[in-house]
Figure (cartoon, one colour):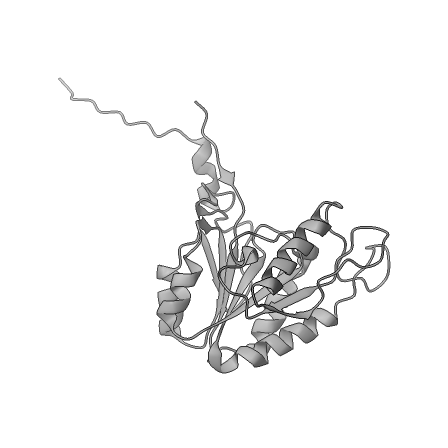
Length: 235
């Protein structure tokens, strides 16, 4: 048998608390969400925002999504390109429609752009219930899914609800909250108050159904090594 390292995707929670730097949270998470049109394994997907700042964050994120210039990478000023293939368009449309059918509010986006190329509008869904498919299946596209929460325990339960555990994000001004998130969130990677993932010097990998092993940091060499124990009782 051969050793292997597997990274199998995720459905990353992005948690924003009332005491967070909200401008920074929106800026960092919007940049991460719409990078490569959301087609990134560590892309934040489930945006969980504390009730006291929920509407403020959703409105700010919606404006950020509307401001993104979508188009060819050969055109000056383009910030987001196309989906990987034409199949992704009906797949995203079905997830978005299912969310709306379950009571979610479409704040912006949700449609293909034009009829040439696989361009899709940056999309924001608000008040998405757990019963919607998109809260349980990774969208792998430029769709941000927002839901409110009340307490720390509640949001950790939601963050850990799915069988995935690759990336996770959180924004808070509390050192105690940050410490609890780092310990209690079930994910191979947790980035707090910034986007600090996928650097060559740090571990990169998931747990649960998101895989095992790591592709970064000094730990990445473990899959290429054999541990050998030698014992010798001298005569």
